[in-house]
Image 1 (cartoon, rainbow, N blue to C red):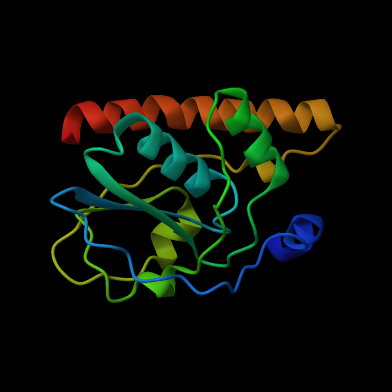
Image 2 (image 1 turned 90 degrees about the horizontal axis):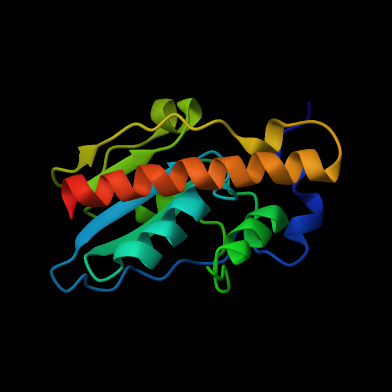
Length: 166
């Protein structure tokens, strides 16, 4: 199977994986959270959007990837199904946050756990091992189902995270 950049070639036409990330705005006392996965295209994007939707008033939420690959079209589709727009989301390299302090850093896969840099300050690292729906082979419906399952798993984990850390 090819690498993520190959898998996302079509999605990258409208997504810029090198778009500069502005320095995160002051969090106004909110707890800062960074979700990290391989491509910042599915899992970390979903987790960011879910936490913002359910507790954006408590958390200042960001996401990044080890090898940014553009927000996947099925990520946008399954999030829209639950009323969450991915408008304005784009893939960001984890190094864009190298000088940023976070309260929580949450790698979402083995690659992110192993490649996650250290951030300034004393962030709490919480490893969530979530399967990548990109790896599912088959027709469109099978892939869509995998994205929905991933979204639902993340939704539950985010709700638990809020109840434990909010």
